[in-house]
Structure formats: structure tokens, C-alpha cells
Amino acid sequence: MVRILVVGVGSIGIVYSVLFTRAGAEVVCVCRSNYAEAKASGLELKSQLFGDQTIYPVVVSSVNEAARTSGKPFHYVVVTTKSFPGTQLQSVQSLRPVLNNATTSVVLLQNGIGIEKDYHEEYPHAQIVSGVVYMPTSRTSPTSVKHTEVERLYLGPSPFGEKHDLARGVSTLLRAGGATVSDCDDIQGERWKKIVANGTWNPLCALSRCRDLQLLAACPLTLQVVNDIMREICTVAAAGGYSKYANEEAIAFQMGRSRARDYPGVEPSMMADMNTGREMEVEAILGGIVKYAQEYNIAVPRLETIYILLVGLNSSFKN
Image (tube, rainbow, N blue to C red; front, side, top):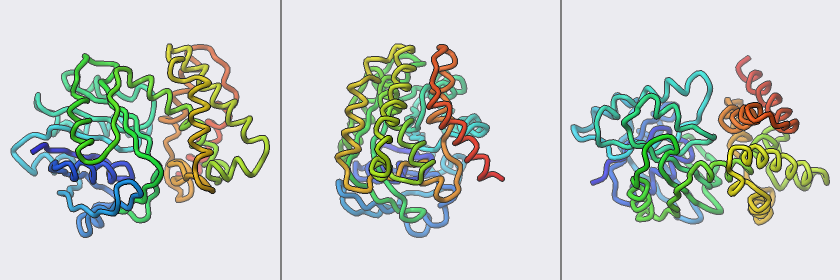
């Protein structure tokens, strides 16, 4: 039986824990803030695609505890935690108790560009699979998720390590659980393609407190501003060699996804965090793009504006 360790049991972690369980894998979940609830009641998914299901995986409170659940190593460590400056390295290092062998591979289902570097520097011999997730969800309780619209996962080898085909093993397993998975040779390109939308709607919805369709309906200028921000992201991506993925076609695709939704649209993760006063993934979603723009000497005034506003908003939560 394939052994899976899921680190970070938020919305994405819950959904994929359910899908791995449906595929017949042994699933162990590292839960922190929702540990007591998950231990007592399991993890619940209510999905238009996958139906309603509650699972009862092995629930632990740390990676150290997970390492002691069996004498056998995990086949995959699936990381779905959010990435924050100041704690990212600590999070990467916390995986050491389950990555001290030649068997376990890492699957990264996190936001951002170039997120794999920290893992390669810390575990140079580990095989790393990188993933891009499209899956609108909302948390209805600490251990319950409502899922609508779509589930798509792109998997491929990390661009910073040796080439391998381990992504195909993860893909096969998840497909058996009902997931929609595509194998990619250039996963970094898929990350740029996603961030065209993620780097635009996430910040705008958090700052406006409107879902995507609400914001489009609120002001006639919204559509132009959204397109302009997306084009700034595409310009940065092109400078890095990813114009094949982040371009006018990608903008049209992402805008089409928004328009196809039922009103009022989706609540992006940053908006959900803002509404509850939790720290938002500003650096992972926006900071990386702004840094690349500075490196390439590209003007991105709209991105810089929303970036500093979100940094300030995050700071206000801490104060």
C-alpha cells in the first residue's frame, strides 16, 4: 500500500487527502490548528464533483510524530501549507525526519514561482515533484471543505533538480481517486500561467472585499484594470522565457473562467484570509513577481501598488 504524508491540512490538503484515500492509499495528516477537530471528527469534503465524504486518516500534530507511525517510510510527502517569509525555511527543515531515506519523494502543491529552490537546497538528493492546483474551495469548518466548479492538477519534475518521471506515479494514484491530473514537462510554465489569474484576482478580491464577479459588476473600470495587471504579469513572465504560458491567450482563458461562474463568483484564498484576519500569502503570490520584475528592470506600477497595500494590510493583522 502506498503511504502518503499530507503536511498542511487546509482546503487543498483536505481535498487531496480524500482523493488519496479513495485511491486506496494509507494517508497520514499533519494537522496543527485543526488537530483536535480532525482527531475527533475526521476530514469532510462536500463536492459537486466528488460527492460528500468523510475520511478518518491517521492524524498527528507534527512531522516527528508522523515518522513514528510506522517502521516503513512514506512514498510521498505532499506539502500543501501556505508559504510565509520567515517561516518557510523552518517549514522545509521540519520535513527532515521523513526525508532521511532514499525512498520518499516530495510533492509540492503550494503557490508561487520558484518555490522548489528551498527544498532542493535543504534536501539535494530528494526527488521533488511540483504541482499546480486549480480548485475553488471554501472552508465551512476547521475540518470541512465545500468544493465547486473544477479540480485540475498539473504535475511535473521540479525545474531545479534532476529530471525524473515520479510525477506519473502520483498522477496514476490520484486519477484512481477521481482527480483530473495532467503530466507536464515544464511545470514552471504552468505556475506562470496560473499566477496570471492568481496574482490578479487574489489581491484585488482581498483589497476590495468583493468576489471576482462582484468586483466586475461594481465598476465599469474593473475589467480594464484586471486585464492591465494580468498583462504586467505576462510581461515579467516573457522576460523569464515563459511567454508560451503567460500571454494574451492565458488572459482570455482566465477571464473566461471567471465569467463562466455563477454570481457572485469565488472567494480566493487571500480574501478568505483577510476576512478572518489571518496572514495572507503576499510574498508567495505577489512578492516573487515583483522581485522578478525588479531583476529584469520591468516597470509594473499596478503590481507594485497592490503589493505594498497588501504588505500593509498583513502588517495591520500582526499589530
